[in-house]
Length: 488
Image (cartoon, rainbow, N blue to C red; front, top):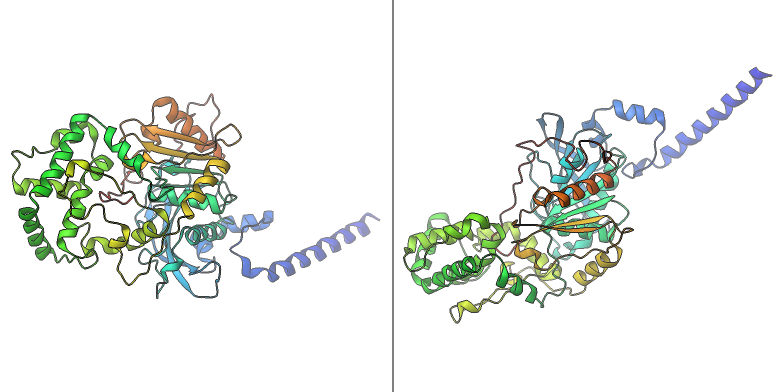
């Protein structure tokens, strides 16, 4: 009887196995979608080299692999639809990187909002949770640009859908919890991703992310710049900015000589004069965005005694004379396009310049080639802002005390059930992070990030409130993108 029963059970298992195999064969095309695996399948996957598993994803191809102690680092291409609403209407290759540690660790989805670095590096949350990291190049930043480029397909929903599709492709491999992070435009990107795909991530850590809800209302930036830092420091940088416009002609001659030597042209902005003034108009913003407030004030030259060359060199060091040349603008066309179609861009008042300014703050339209049409969508940012205010769940924002981009911040829904937070790092600028918070906030932010990732040590552990991975001088170098012009 027992033998018969065993035979019957074996038959049932066999039939079930055949049924599962048939179902699996019928869904092979959806291999990039997350789903459960059998214990045997999990053992088989674990035994497969991680590179093979990544390259088994439909549409994934290898650009290069670089070794790094304790990790595998891959630079990859992933085939994406140009239009996620109509996937059949063309594709493009989007560049991404994977810093692989262990599939048993959490994954951090890091976005810069611009091009992606092809060198190994960890975002701060990746160090905090001792996890893996995937980094995505934002669509339309070269080489991740469709050809031909239909610029109407560059918007925050399409980019969020890029992230969602990458997440769905990698989730079967990295099955632990995922966090999304990014700084500046990357922090905005992480926020927009959460707005459109709120079920993907276990938490969001967004750094120095501006929230320009109403594009034409920029008084918050004027108020911020009127009170930031020591009064003497504000007066000194404003005086230098004014002096640069007073000496417009001799300094423009130096810029023309530099342009001749370096091959700079100014077709997009229109004239060298417009480019010159745009750099000078950004000087105050760029100073507070990146200069270390503790030492930079003492380095501001005295307008009464500074030579033309020293003044020219100082403006270059803070603002960058190449910023509005065609060669400086070309790589940032996707940003200016987005600023002029959805994101918005600050326009600040500078009364200390009096009638010295000929153009005022120039709009993003001036920095995008004229053959690319632009139309502003005034609904996009208010929609995101409302969603964050009312629906944010496990979202964290970190700002710097001296960073102008923090004048208009995201304000996530509050309360224990939302578990969302806003922190400001004292004395910090556009490079603000959790490590720069005051000790109790630093410990709290670290603990919440680890809790969201499912790796928080017990409160009694000596590791509580501290990053789980030791600091690495190469991986954890906070190489903040220096955009002294009005780019987040």
